[in-house]
Length: 430
Image 1: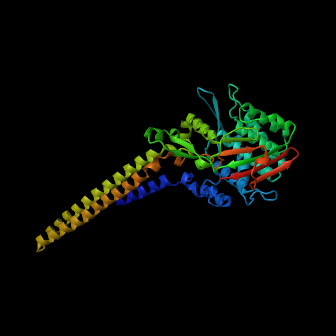
Image 2 (image 1 turned 180 degrees about the vertical axis):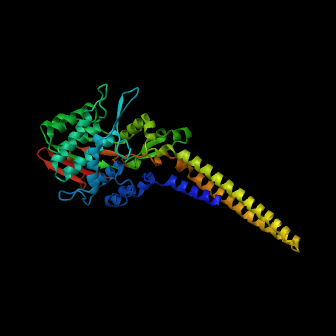
Image 3 (image 1 turned 135 degrees about the vertical axis):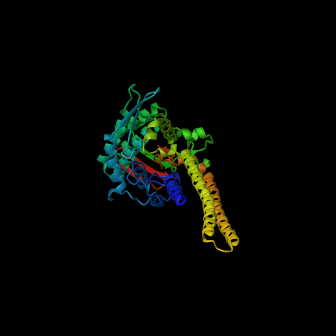
């Protein structure tokens, strides 16, 4: 009975360690593979069915809906469930608990969602950008302007020393693109001048006298986390072992450049900054019910190893005990019965006890060997801290801005808008 109970507990423990409501990295693979083949509808259909009301999957699905080449988002379409929930989440985030942490560099500022996730600064920006683009795609320009304004408010937020919490040239260009889509020339130029001051743009002042006529390519399915370090100390420490790698083949990687007619910038620095930020307040994350799984991989392995050994020990002891009990009990009964042919009977009793005890004992050995083989083969996966690393996926690896459309190969856009200020044309390439 003890053996069965321990096996049941072991089964529950193993299931508990390998399942749950947190989406694992491998569960994104079908969706990612579909997107690599530029099948955006299939990417949506294969999206993991977990965390449906959480910030991360909502943001990921709203992006996939925005770029869907079968026009999930149109001027006449109703808001999707995910868009409605994300819009509601964006308003709740503004009212949620704010966490401020000081370090030797500056004052760091964090917002926590209801499920306990701390969005990165670029993820908050990305949320407002996608909401704004979706509104603009549906020709709800007033609502798109609200999201553009919220992005500007993010840029205006400063720490105790007056340093902006989050600002970089790439995000300024995307913000200018949203303002341009809203027909807000003056605000777009403000962002472009700021991007130029940071070395990420050329010729901001020219748009005072001519309209914006931009093509922007969203290139790639997004940087993915990986854990290459073989150092146990790196793995158990959490974020130090994680690196973000592009899924784009090296020969197809766009050249990062800044010219008068073309700007290419990568989202990889956004993810790197997120890792640094998370390392700063790792203890806070470890206490959170969300994103904490990455710190438990080796502990899971050790616990599985221990409970397997305990269960095996019980099985082996049970085999010996059963064998002894059969022999001892049989001899006792034979002695009490006073039956004839006692020597033959005793021989049979000993034989039965030996067979029963040996079979259970051998079953214990087989159980231990097979379980250890499985655990050892999966140890690398248990130790892969990127397995449970939660962050917003599908953010393009690169943004390629063409300011001279005559030199651009036309690709079917997922977003195109024209107004008195110019034209913005957005397309996706895996």
